[in-house]
Length: 417
Image (tube, rainbow, N blue to C red; front, side, top):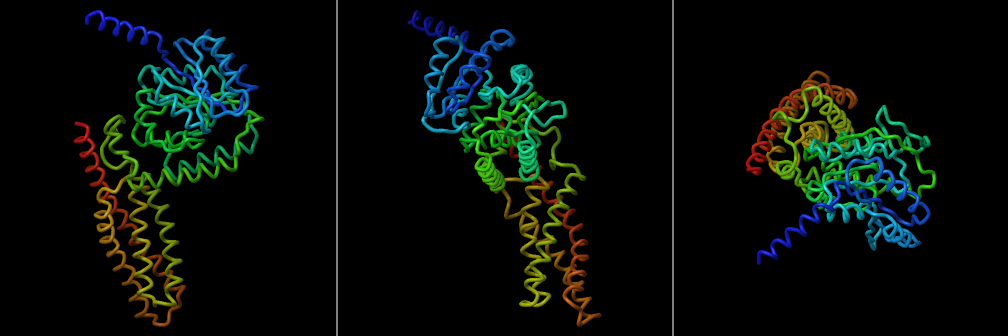
């Protein structure tokens, strides 16, 4: 019995010794021409210029050419190279498969064309090895990055990241750079939540990681565009936008357990309370307010000829108030999930009651002094009244959602115990 236990421990120790610190994954699909030279170049770099034990994993995404044959030849010829074959296409699908089963401390990936300068690999993984950061990405959009690519791809990249910042409140600068790394223990917890198996995989992973409080380290890179890239830009953009909508809806409805994950593996905020300061909240509240006012004005103009001024004002204000509360709950004050959503809407409707009083009172006063006033004058008076109601609404909602933020904080602390 003792000999058996000793043998098992010896095997475990041997496995621990041979396990690499970094597992660099190269997802490929029909790359028979470029795979060999790129892997040999990366292998030489890791052997001569990289201080940590590393392994190269070629993740073949159901290639139909001779990619697998080339990959097997590289495995036979080079130490520290292995190949994993998948029957379905998809970069994200390949990364999930390899990363979840890797025995390395850090999992990383880079594009097969090695567009990113390899000298950025050490700055990418060092904060992960030290434990300072949880995930690291290369960014082509930093001021110190040096990038060679056409204006079309530059415009698409910057536009996409602008969409992420405005719609999902993302703070990372470059979602789609093919140069990322992650602590394996964290990856195994987060990856099951990432639904996409294609190009949106990177974005979804980063958004979830950021929302649960993981620290994302960004490395400016030197990057040269591959002019022979086979990526279908139009189809990829369409799928990415659908992915943005899906992830945004999942976080708003509570389908993604952000609070539970944050309590389990994330980093809690340094200060309690609402996530933004007064200025940030006012800016976002103003954006929501402008959109709500435009929606209100449109509804009022459409309904007034049919319902009359008072009823049209009530219906338009009620509809936009519900949408306004939901938008401010998520976008302005950072409260997500389905918890207390009905209570928040009821409190929002109480604040709506004050707005109704102000706007209806202004209409009553207008009609008292100017009985035959035109709809445009009514609308002007209502917009001014809505501005007054909006100020009261901001103060009221800030109080409502500050309480919600404190309640969420308490629930997270109790769940973590």
